[in-house]
Length: 272
Image (cartoon, rainbow, N blue to C red; front, side, top):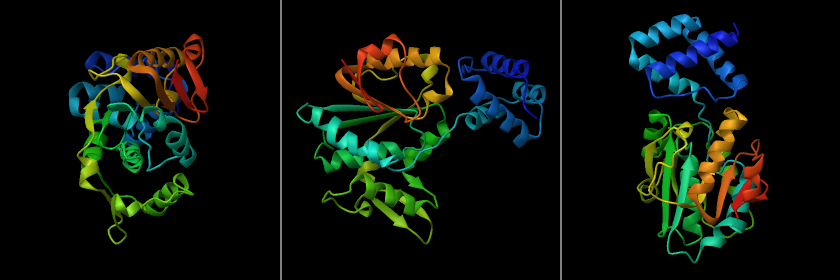
């Protein structure tokens, strides 16, 4: 059963009262779908979910994890990785260091995709990789670098498409692939590189004591309303070096006055 707007507001208010999570600026349409799924999965009405949250903090954390959407893959949208390789990374090759922040990093495949690319560009040693997500479980998966997926062939296809025409090592130079176990294990030297931290973009704070040359925030902002999106874009703008690049999802875009502060190249925005 589709939740009413009153039920959604009750849920948001209850979560806000019982925790530090704030869903008040999420897109109503997408949040409604997530609440409807919770109701179906737990076979409970919104008041029943709220009642159980009040009695069990771990249940609240579980619901928050289920609400946050975690969809990612190695070299997702290969054409974007071609643009990053050809247009973005060369801008920073003469820097002493290159700071990269993956905001909403999920289980880390994007983090490791970027590190593989930087390794291929001979920029791995001076790359500093930072990643954040609201969900602590996906952060732990990212830290492990171990993925139990059936989409091994899809990931290989993504990698091949992202590196087409280039004389580069095969993907298993970076990953240990076991078809028997249906697992992918990222090589240790890649796993040891990133720093991970729990962080809620709604806080509108840069959680690191750094500015960045590249910020990834792909397929996260689509779940927020336009007002919150623009406040987050302002935070990203302040967190970038001049000439730094913000990379967002193909169904996302920057609107309003903040867009004038960037040069746009598809889904890549470069700070003026």
